[in-house]
Image (tube, rainbow, N blue to C red; front, side, top):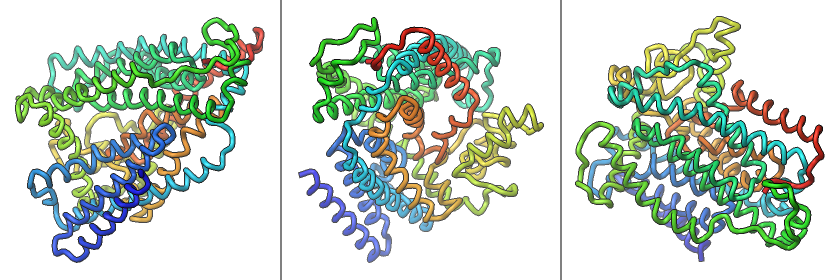
Length: 509
């Protein structure tokens, strides 16, 4: 049934495309095609949600940032296409291309998954003492570094009491010792290392709960993305672990695994034949049903609370949620206007926005500053950031907003704009194809070993933001000294402990 719905939506998408070609104003037909393609991709994700959870969440954020605004605007009868003909046509065409090739990439990823004979997560269950100690060391580092993360967050909360939201973005600089920031960066890395060692549910829950709560100070300041991304990450991890559980039980591995596993808490073997409990049980599903609408209402209210304004439409929950998606969808506007602004982008020799975060880290990062005398581009809005480097969001924001950018405003970026600026429509096609392949294959790849699982989890912390952010920013962590420091500490500690003490055979559960 799901396949029939999916193919029906794809047929309707082609119908909308042909209608757009025959119309003098093709915007409505192309938007209809975009919506049908998005719906087909969502149906595809829901067919096997456990395995395609990353594909699902990416399309949720893609709708939120790039599709929701024109759809809601069309339903309201607004001139949602009023950004110039060529600009809007680019925005709609780029959305059509990315949705089509995300789907094709997912189909390729699904074919690869069908050829894998072993159950997902089986490789991690085969690992021995190293994974046991790697998890213990990572968990200790997580709790220690979390203290410094909350210190930085509380400093922001204190600052916002006497400053505006835009002053925070343009002027805020931490006054805490730099070592506090460095130690706080270990939180995310140690979290992913710990979770990659397959801790049992009772140990994973407090860690994930604290990780979500660590973004509350940013929410108080007015930043919504951190807590949303953290919550999506936590839920995705639960779903992936449930995917591992179902795969093992379906393939008949559960009894064999449980007969030789080791409990993470006390090192005692479990009873043979004891199966793993579902990660998403009735309690978790009930909490989601309650938390999702309440969370959307709170996030919608933040649009006005952070600026001290009254809410449009009063306290009507449906109006608040619709307004949330409409305002978050402003990235569609910047997608369209960004195309028109491309001839005015600064040219400072070689410029590449797709890998801009990598280039700027090498050329202007802390290592380049200390050893090669490079100039820091800073982290807040400034003329230096707007005219130098390879950061598309700062370049575009200064072109479109001018002095408002210097006052703290910004328009963000999008992977569609960045890859198009560097490689044209072919860049959108290739990037979307690879992305769709990765989103579907990642959950099964995660079960190979703890290190690969850690890398995939770290990618997940920022991957879903790329419809309104840097194309490859979610991969930048592999270049940072903080990541390698965390890896050396956790991995080195695990190797020392596993060598010194009796190697505990089994896995963390």
